[in-house]
Length: 115
Image 1 (cartoon, rainbow, N blue to C red):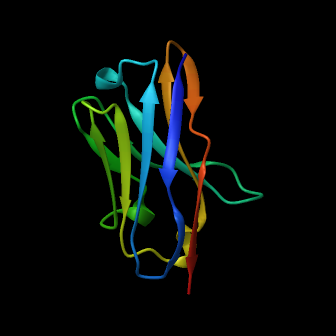
Image 2: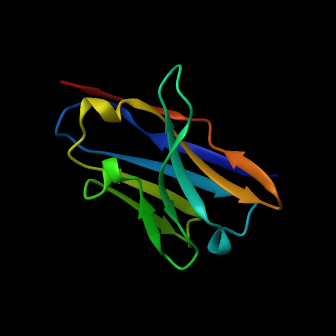
Image 3: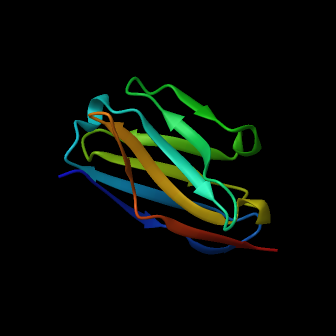
């Protein structure tokens, strides 16, 4: 059974930092392409960052230089380090992967940035 279990997030002041984690099971994490998305109520879910199995990363423009996506293959865990947060980063964050042609999502974790 595929599971993506998220942790981290919470309330932080603007300029602060948070780290999100996404622990996976039921997939061959080493070869999985992993993503972080975020969603604000009433809006669609948007891609924030992606990391390939070889460690190649890409980010949406609004988080470049502030967020870092990483992976620990030994722990089958995905991370998102978020620095210099601003109020526009407030959202529910989701990890995601496609495995055996199905999309799998974490349960979501809320990030609230106060001004």
